[in-house]
Image (tube, rainbow, N blue to C red; front, side, top):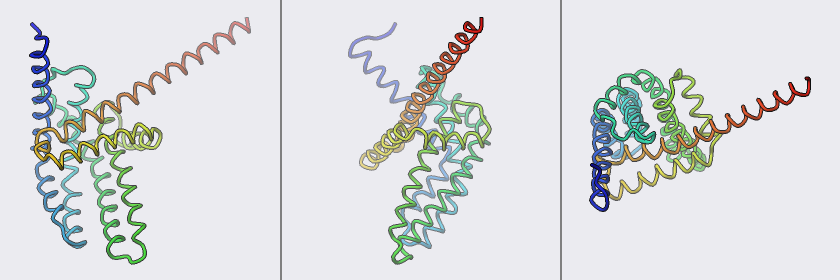
Length: 248
């Protein structure tokens, strides 16, 4: 029997707190080596220390963070599409295993680009006199790359494609849907900002909330694209029927 009223609201809220927190903890545990290095990264004091940490981060991330994030997005996909009672452990680890190779290959690509941009940013900012302004170009590129990465995880959890197609379509969505991509990025940044102020969110909600919000926006884009495609096909079919009638 479904509870209604205030008690029903509290029950549903507690269910969502449990779902988000369990998924977030699974994500952190399966990518734990990466987060250990992140703590060291935050303590870097100069460019040399930064380089020494960024390279291990770029090596570890594709094998830990990316498969874990892919699994988290697969769980978020189920929720957004209405399957809220999906078994969390089974769904997370099944998708972790199924998407591991593609997530790892995509991770190698993104990790390499992020490492290059981060190091270049630090070099231009601190060591290239008169070229500090160029450093902020690398921030913009990292921002676009981050949006593309979020699209990549959404695509990986939703479609069966080759890795090169996933990377290409992630870039197309980033550039081709700038407003929706910006909304998605602003939302993710807001969650990050709030998490830095209320650090208890990080172990329980940080990643899972971003995954749900990101896939929700991604799904809206995909649904709109499918609707436009259906309308175009309907118009084309109507035009062909009209041409056939005129010939007769």
